[in-house]
Amino acid sequence: MYKILILDGVTGSRLGKILREEGYTVSVAQTAGEVIGALRSEKFHLLMAHLPDQEFNALYKILDLKSSLKLSLPVLILAPTPTVPKIILTLERGANDIMESPYHKKILISKVRALIRSASRLSDSKLTVNGDIVIDPKRHEVRVTQTVIRLTAAQFKLLSLFVENPGKIFSREELLGAVSQGMEHQSRSVDTQIVVLRKRLGKEGRRIKTKRGIGYVFV
Image 1 (cartoon, rainbow, N blue to C red):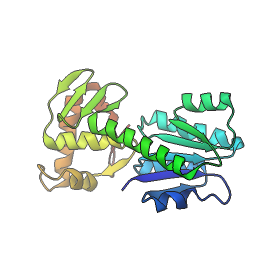
Image 2 (cartoon, rainbow, N blue to C red):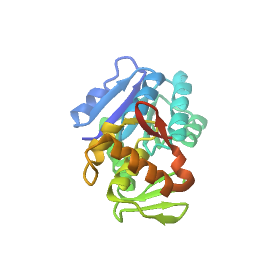
Image 3 (cartoon, rainbow, N blue to C red):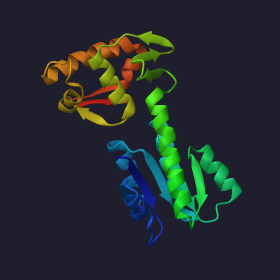
């Protein structure tokens, strides 16, 4: 089930209802702060913003966060009569597409499907973070600065989980549950795997931070 996060600043908007009718799981936020909180705690397949012109500064804050967290999340913007300079700036700040509101329902759904499909293809082939860590799920291969590094199945799963959820804090129990196959069923076995993973990643291993008393986070 694909999950869509919407920043909806338009009174009486039916956007969430339309997407739910198409089978998507939808979360609706009213402010940039709510969106930022959701992006830090959950994984979404698409971010949409339905905004009047005067609220674009809030959108830019979100796009800046997306960039800083290195999220591969596609972004679709709906706006009334956007000007050419605003369209250019929005795309350059990290949005994938912008369309005029009011919108045609069938065109909107087609754009949503196309963006999610394109992002899914990329995640199925390679996931790149900062150009330094490249994970190839099909080959079960990890490269750091173009050098292939050897990981066990459990370490590969851990790294994939971290890279797909930058900024999210995972407890030891959550990590163990996600990658328990091939690991001892003890939370301390996670600590051992993290120590080895950090060493094998070299300088990039420093991005796996310990949250004392809680677990780990990839930054």
